[in-house]
Length: 47
Image (spheres, rainbow, N blue to C red):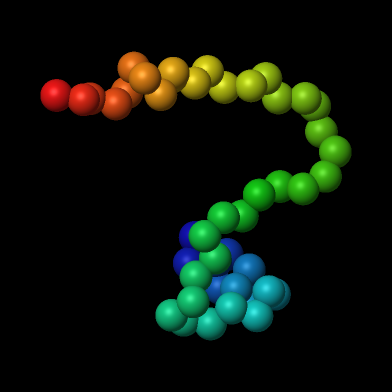
């Protein structure tokens, strides 16, 4: 993984201590279904 990361960082001109926080695949592909989400009210404690 370190070798792959080094290649990506070199390709997009990132050097330490800067970091790439997200790498996403761009392009065409099958439609992915939406992921389920919790309603915010069920995750926040008020007491």
